[in-house]
Length: 75
Image (cartoon, rainbow, N blue to C red; front, side, top):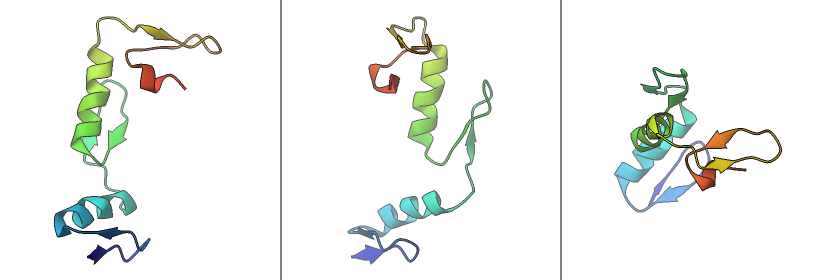
């Protein structure tokens, strides 16, 4: 197994350890040009951009009235 030297989390593949190591880095290479939020992971960045581009935001918070395109973002 491959272990993280920062948090001791273990991985079976070295590539997974390398991806995980980015979580301990301040480097976030994927930045949203709409709101400025930055991401370590490209797939999370792409998901974020899709949320900006959603034509309809179907899920509304009854507490703060914000709307979201995904139910999982409604917390």
